[in-house]
Length: 105
Image 1 (cartoon, rainbow, N blue to C red):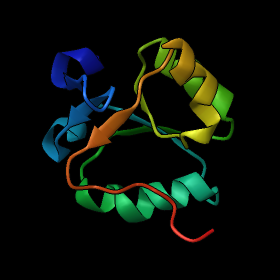
Image 2: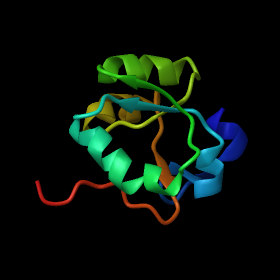
Image 3: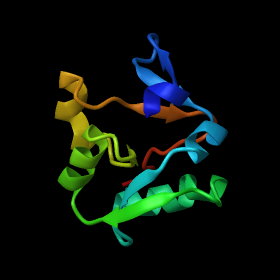
């Protein structure tokens, strides 16, 4: 799914998406109230009023499995997917013009 719309950047070792490309993909997000979901709501979904949020999921592990099964694009903290990034099981995606880092905390 991701490989059909994104461009891979060797320099940054991640996929690059525009906001319009991201809007075409189903999103898998954490439940309301989680810190990651708050960042997604405040910094990402405001740019995607018509985004297809497939499901709000309570467990990061469930999101990882759904992403591996190509059900959607997962929105998780980098800390949660460190191991999967290192093994290549999951890949990081940057969205042009959007900073999803947590500030102050």
